[in-house]
Length: 158
Image (cartoon, rainbow, N blue to C red; front, side, top):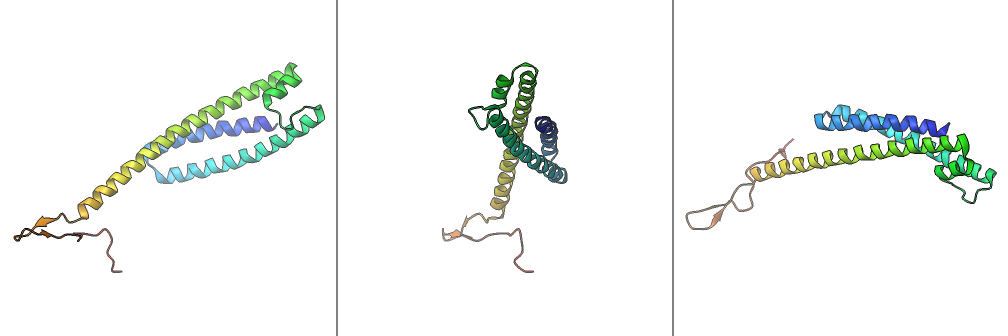
């Protein structure tokens, strides 16, 4: 069933974003690259499954004479009632919980990435500042070394 497949992938995706947090903390770029590839593949599968789900619900809505062409899972659960309705409600709850957890981990991971970027930017600015020659006064009272640089990160000669 499409929804069960989505749940399986969302569970796997949750594990991937949990792992991503550990990788970000350890700063292992190779593992991060591999983890991102896995996450992208899962997101592509989910996109395909979601397209199928939308098509299936439209077909069900048409066959059941429902007013909405794309009813929500909860709407279908109410419409069908009984065991089918209960099963749809359970699937909806599981999907909702998994999505919430994936979003929470993604937000935490985003904070880690932003923090790392701030530290890198600060370090680059500090390096740039150390390479800039500080102006000094000459004997005549004029500033010396104005606009020159005392060092370069990369040589222009190759």
